[in-house]
Image (cartoon, rainbow, N blue to C red; front, side):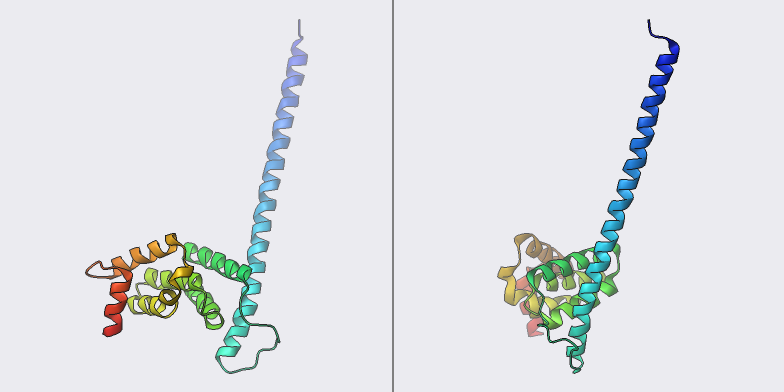
Length: 176
């Protein structure tokens, strides 16, 4: 027969293991959050540098770097990721600034332009929304995936009184 002392000792060991597991899980979670925060800071710094170079080019100043000012494909992914986070957090002003700076030096990135159009949509800026679509998105529509295009069509229909397609609405806006 098992003595009560042995049962209590076993329960104490199980409890201690549970507490240790909880502490390790909490520590691991904090490490992951800190890692994500560092990654986001690094991403913001990298995009800030590109944006600063782009802004300098936009105001006629000479950039301080001899680097090519265009974003690489990974840079586009990083900018889109940052824009997505900014839009989701409601920081639309900052998202608009990032998107405009990215498009200034990389006008051939319709995915970034689609994010800028989304910012204008969320702000209720109908004119700017359609301007971004006509200048950046429509000429390169084939580069967008179907889901992004579908979302842009939904936004357009909500902006359009007659609920027309993107192309029809843009044609109407261009004639006005």
